[in-house]
Length: 74
Image (spheres, rainbow, N blue to C red):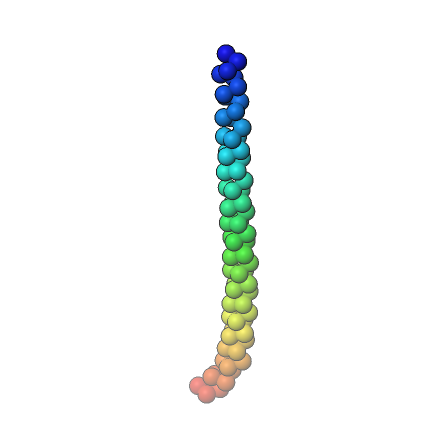
């Protein structure tokens, strides 16, 4: 019985180390994925702001050009 316990103890230490290493690696991968997703969301937000500003400028330009068009019609 003592021999069985000794064998189980000897083999359980490396197994615990392997499992722990696996979980640490998974955590690192998840962290990288989350960082990449965060960077992507920042880029999406920046793009949205740029597009919104561009649309605002185009709208202002259209408003300024609109009175000129009306005078040509009359």
